[in-house]
Each structure stands twice: as C-alpha cells, then as structure tokens.
Length: 50
Image (cartoon, rainbow, N blue to C red):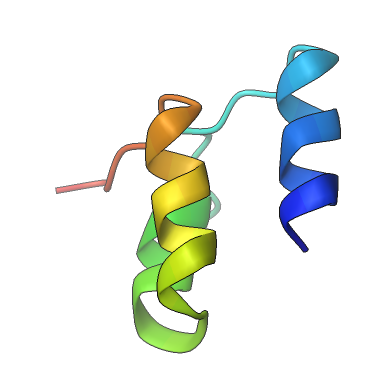
C-alpha cells in the first residue's frame, strides 16, 4: 500500500481530494488502515476533510 501512495504522490495525485460520503484518503485511512499508511498520507500532504 505504501508504494502505491508514493507512486500516486509522485505523479501528482491530490492527497486531499474529497469524495462525497467518504472524505479524503486520510479520513478513510484513519478508520481502516494501518498507522504506516496514515503516516505516509500525511507525509505526502494528506489532510482530513474537517
């Protein structure tokens, strides 16, 4: 999973894009993903929708 996040960031993915009903990737990760995934999203500029 971490490699995918790194690749998406490298190619300019918006780590704070909001999807209706889900929130941002970080919002989702905080609920279901391991701590390493949350840390990786934060390193790449991920924010919560709050």
